[in-house]
Length: 169
Image (cartoon, rainbow, N blue to C red; front, side, top):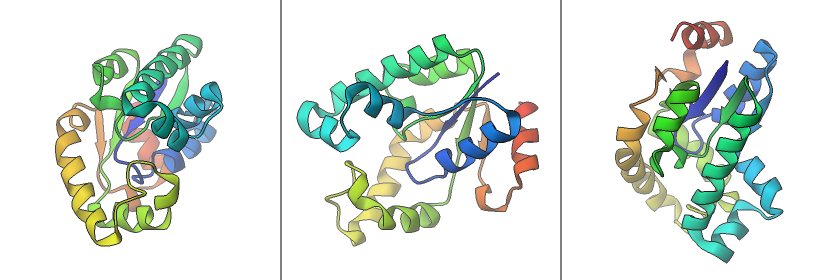
């Protein structure tokens, strides 16, 4: 079984991914962390040194390798991962894709605390961040909506409900 979590940055993919992987006794991978390991650079440095296009290629290659090497896993993807190179089609072919459709206000509060670690938003002022989130969510929605499962009450769902919803997809 492969469970692939998608959603906007700050939507809770890593948080839920770790819990689901632990509960189901599956290996957990954070795609950004795997790219960082492979390149021996932070995501911010990869963006700064080589640009987003290069990062997106690495992300795709890393995801494909993880899937090839793991018959079962929980994979937390970057917010933009499903939006490039037909990644969403690949994800759906190899696993159950779960969209964490977290409310804009929740995402905003989380991202305000960690802007410095996120290269796409680090230079956006606090007032502009909400507008950025809404704009990007609207751009990415058509990809996110292709998920097999949509969870939009992320803060009100129990772990058991989360797992049951995913397993019955």
